Image (cartoon, rainbow, N blue to C red; front, top):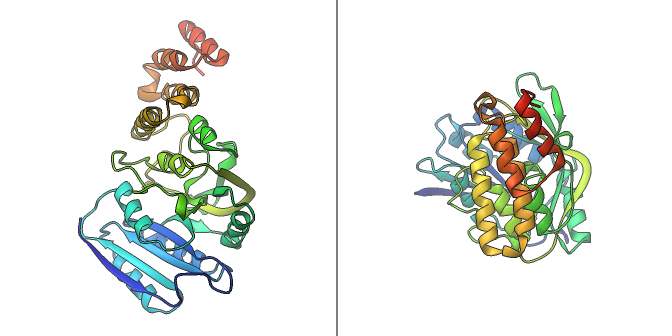
Length: 314
């Protein structure tokens, strides 16, 4: 894939006034209608040492022209990457990661928003906790068309802290656009090209391979937009099959590298199998529960399996 590059620099690449550089990595594809609001939310942050890295995956909606206008405005430091052809989200995330120069990397989707104080609060946590490799926070999940809150991210995914075992066992409990990462702990390449869509889970896991912790800020510091073009499913009852398949493949990659994590891997596989029980209107409901039990026995799952014989599904 051929990329064109555009960089506007207004400061050096190191610390400014004793504050470490933060690279805000924005990945986008045909999101022009939302991208301006996203960029404005970044530019309004009170943290002074930021570079905004935008990787555009060959958008056809005028995104490139708008980004060039932002870069020329002098309102911030922009690093732009334009793909000549669409490579998909994993490829685009790798393009963004490779263009970042900061000590810390803050991930953003082009349709999501930062809330005031986000970057300052995350940098403070990471600077005061040298073992913190990933810092994340709660999110306001909102409907794109009405602007109304649907729920908080923590309403669905219980916030957790811990090491690599925690991330393997419990999956992507850390909402993607809430994360700040210590750049030196990223894998290379950052995202595994074998995983086309849901490659972020393996990325978080690999960031903690060398040690360190993931730490949670119990505060809503970002907004995650839900609309018809979201890559991942918004339903906990009917998850995206492709997303689950990517996560199952991730389990195999993790197990091949760290067989001592078999307990955590099997716990995650059990959850993933159970999550698929409503696929095709629940036609294989019982089979998915049985598959889940083959990885890890849970009484609640076993009861659900037995109840399915009398027509009860829950």
